[in-house]
Structures are given as structure tokens and as C-alpha cells.
Length: 375
Image 1: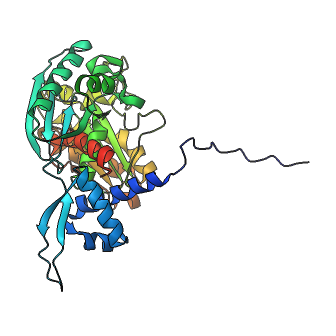
Image 2: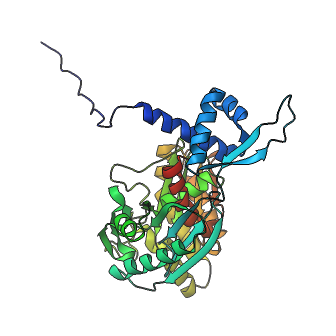
Image 3: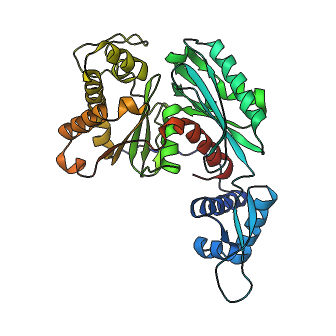
């Protein structure tokens, strides 16, 4: 009897690697080295990248022609012969737009330089607006910051609540009243610029990983109008089979009921942990019990994630007066109580680096990643 053949794996449909792809890869390597290390001479770049000086000089020339790199003047390093000329990423001559749609009752946008520094800010109140009204406000807000840019714009990065699928379509965002909104195309058509749309927690985890203190294996929980998570595993952002990784806000935590959520279910994590619900609960309470319970419920939801992926960091991003102290301590205690002692030895529970602007900066990082290959 013939043994059964192993099931064939799906063959990738990606195109073959062409010489042009290799060149783009090398250009990206040069930009990544300059972005992470700082200005250096062509000779130093060649040594660090393991390329010939001729190759690096050719790549740098192309990057300068495109405006992505600039010369800064002679190197101060003392060596025999003529000092080398420093080159760097064009940090001040290029800009990116970041947009944050996840804050409670307000939409925010900014012009940023390539180091994630905010140069111009703008915002629009939306209150309880939903649907097309919010889309119109987004376009108005983006138009203002695009007009305020003082250098060529690489692109627009948008962090939004909800599930973002292929093509920048917001499949569902209950808090904004959106279903299947083609946000990327809408904004791109209005601005004629490259547009990148991701979940707000994904944008936040990009900021913490690239511009902050994040390690290679972490989950970042973004608390604002809703609750969402962004995952970095092995130095790579995890998206999931349905582009919904980290969507923990509407996971039911516990079997003891709870409040009815906007999504229609009872006992969603968001009903305990979102900023509006926490504020309301604190206003009606005589102590910090709502914060303690929110931390415990969040720990219940995160413990299986931390265990399954063997994560080393749990990062909280949102209002510090809500997330610091009691809530963070309760989360830490719950995780340690529910995980094996060995896995919690090096587990860190902390607040995010510069949380107020984390989605804006993370959205700009997405632009750098796509347009310059910098991550």
C-alpha cells in the first residue's frame, strides 16, 4: 500500500526577486544604518555594512539625488589622509503626517520630522459624532496639517480604532460608527499623498519599539476611547490571520456578567478598562476599586497571551492618572498569580514612553518604514 503523501504547503505568490529589488534592499540598509547610528562617512558605512566603498558611494549618491540623505560636512574623526564627509538621513528636510483617531472626543494630527519630533499640531473635537461626520472631520483635519508642513511630505500615517484590513479599509470601528470605510483611499484621493492606515494600538507599539524603550517581545495595550493591543514578537509586528491581532477590547473577561458593551455583548474588557468607562466608574465610587478591578480584568485577558507568546514586556499606553499606580499594580499581581513563576522572572509591566503622542509618532514611523525602509 502506498503511504499517504504529506499535504503540500501553499506556494507563495510573490514575484521573483529581481536585481532592482536587491538594490532597494541595499538602499534601505544604508538608510537604516544612518537612522539608527547617526551621521557617518561613506568609508564607515562601508565597513559597518560589509560593502565596498564604491558600492556605498553609489548608493549614497542615489539617496542624495532623491532627497533622502544629505551631506553634513567633514568628519571630526582623526585619521591619516583627507577627512571623510559625513552623510545622514535627511532628518529635517523631509516630514511626515501622523493622525490619531483613537482619543476620547477629539481627533488629533501633527507634522513630524524623521526623528518623531512634533513640529505642528492640530485637533478637532467630535464629541459623540459617528459615521460620515467623522470622515469629514478627518479630511478637514488632515488638510490643515498638510498645509502647515514646511518640507516635502513622505506620507500620511493614520492610527484608528477598529480592525483595519488590506488596502487601509476600516472593517469595523464601533466607537466611530464605521463599517467597511475605505479610509486610505478617501484620504489619498483628497491629498494626493501616500497614506497608511493601521489600528491605533499597532501604531503605538511601533512608536514604543522604534522610538521608545520597547524590546523584541512585547504587548502594548492602548487605552483610550476603546481598548486594543499591539504585538511585537521576535522584533516583528504581528497582524494575525484576519488583521485583528491585539483586538482584546471586546473579549469577555470572567463569567460573572458585567455591563452591556457598545458591541452588544455583556462583560467586554472595554466596559471595565476604557478611559470613558473608568472615569465614570471612579466618579461614582468612593475609592480606587474600579482601577483595581480594571487591572485584574486586564490581567485575566493578557495572561494567556503573555504565556502563549512568551512575552517579556506588558506596556500600558493611555492616561497616566488611570493606568499608573493601582491599575498597573493590580495588572502586575494578576499576571504573576496566573503565570508560571519561571516566565514571570523577567516580565516587566510598565507605562509607555511619551504616551500622549504615541499614536501620532507611531503613525509617522509607519510612513518611514514604507517610504524609506526604516524601522
